[in-house]
Length: 123
Image (cartoon, rainbow, N blue to C red; front, side):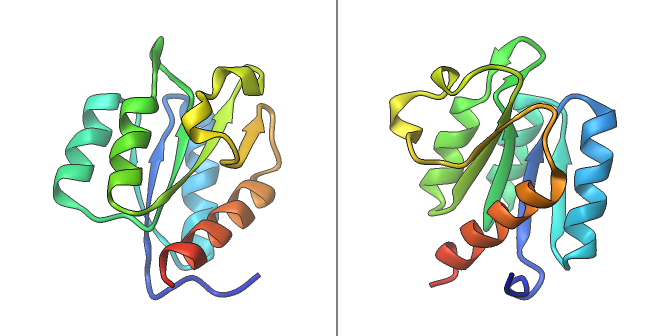
């Protein structure tokens, strides 16, 4: 895959530390700046102050759907990669076509999807 666009910022919204830490490490290894949080409020706060190139969003954060955050990411012109323990039916039609990975997933495949999103955003 191509190299990241100069320290592109990636929003990571994941409430399970055992999943969040390896993704943070993988993003850093690829040269990305990872802005991570385990809450929807934290994600919205990050988006108020930071412009992101892409986002990795767990569909269910502490029992709540993440799609309000996904809409804010899209409003910035960036794309989302979804992770879920559910089926693709959990993804609203407005995000049809967005990459999603069912847990457990291969972290490298998730990061590869982020690279594609960042490349699209940087055009």
